[in-house]
Image (tube, rainbow, N blue to C red):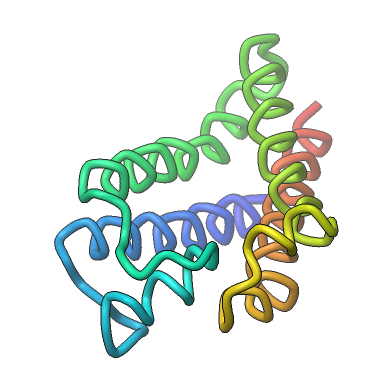
Length: 139
C-alpha cells in the first residue's frame, strides 16, 4: 500500500506544483496566457484567475497529498475516515461532472473539453478510487 500512497502523493504534488507555477505567471504547457486559460479552465476566458487562487488550489492539493500517509499512520481513526470520504467525494464529483452535458456546455473551449474527457476527469476519478482503496486496505 505504500506504493499507492506514494503514487497518490506524487500525482497530487505534481498538480499542486503546476498550480503554483501558474500562480507565478508561468504559462506552460501553453504558448500564451489565453492558450493556457483555454487548456486548463475551458470556459471561454482568455485570462487566468488571480495568482492567489492558483496558490490556494496548490496549497489545498499539497495538503491532500499528505493524506495517504495519514491513512497509513492512523487507518482506524474516525476523523481520517470522514476526511478521506469527503476528499474522495470531491474528486469523484469533479471527475463525474466532466461527463455531464451541463458541464461540457459550460466548459466547452478547446483543448480543455477534450482534455477533460480524456485526462482531467478520469484522473479525478482515479484519485477518488485510490484514496478509497487505500482507506479500505487500512481498515
